[in-house]
Image (tube, rainbow, N blue to C red; front, side, top):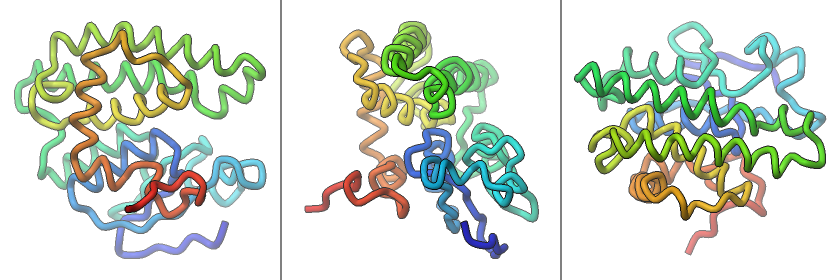
Length: 222
């Protein structure tokens, strides 16, 4: 990794395939915030996140981290909430307290109850049964999420407004696809995901369209 220099623009430390990084990219795109990207490969050289240089950025040695407004934030939901509080348009939370609680509940369900159990660090510890492990926890989480969304969803996760919950959903469905999870039992999740992937902010931030995406994984252009 090269020496990290500060700029006037926010600086995002992330990895193209990281679902946590993708959440933050979507928030930045929705709010039309220009930023510089510092790719942190989770694979190259044993993982650039383990370097002493990056440890100074995020002591937990995870992505993403966002350097903005003179300080550095990590943890994707904290970053998204900070962006929403400091750059409130378009809002990523409804005004109604019940709806706001539903957004946080769904977001936490995905980011604490599903995604960490199939991230790269965990799967490396699991070994040969990592596919079955990932599938088990995604299926378990999606069974509950499908029921939750039946109570909250409109066009998107909570009503018809794009919220932080949607920023968590799309990357998790992509992970499910990568781990060959059958999505047929989850029609509500599938419908919401399809609706969100029609929006520009979700398309341009897709892992197949990032500067650090390997050529073989890049989206094919017409």
